Image (cartoon, rainbow, N blue to C red; front, side, top):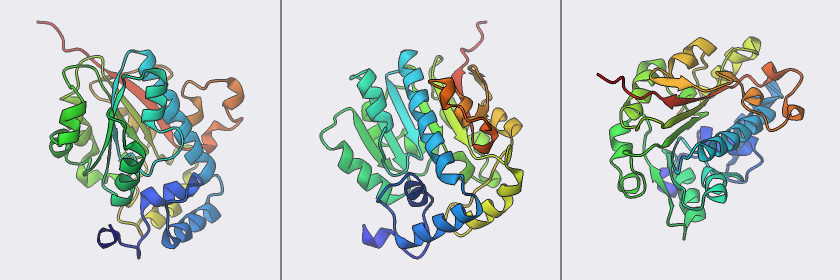
Length: 267
């Protein structure tokens, strides 16, 4: 793996791991993370809120009958991964993780060893045909049945030039009616004074960041019915308790939402 990893530039996946208190990061990642935290002290709390949203969304999907998950841009594993939450609630749940970071994929495969209902793929989510055609996806997931496609804290690393709406559509076209799209996305909404410097910092990485507004994130759900409570700040998406909601939820500037794929209109 050493030949595949550029240790001179920080990785968004490894920086995120550091925010969450993980150990799968290097000095260059920690240096960038500390600079970011110095400019925006709430960042670790925002990242933790994002992981908490992921866990609540997975549980929501399981409760709705979903038994298969495609987690795009899954990052480096940490406690409460998709397969842990889904399989604790439904042991027959199947999960495929997809990331383009070789370290994230290597650790995922190590964690998943012996789990026949979960796999990890190294691939670029911007290429839906390649992701969906991978052997691991074909072996574990049946797109004739409802599925949850997870795009959690990843589309802000897709530039406008790469057309994130078209990427989402590439996956949507394969999803059966009743499937879910789970998304969280960095936004300048709530903390506009922090957005510019944070995006500048991420330009040092191979994955620069594009923050988007609530209306832009909502537009990515074309073809889906957004379930209640809509596109909201991370802590406001179906909190387990009102005690979990900060008095200033706009501090958690990430936006979160879940959409259900609309059935085609009958002729």
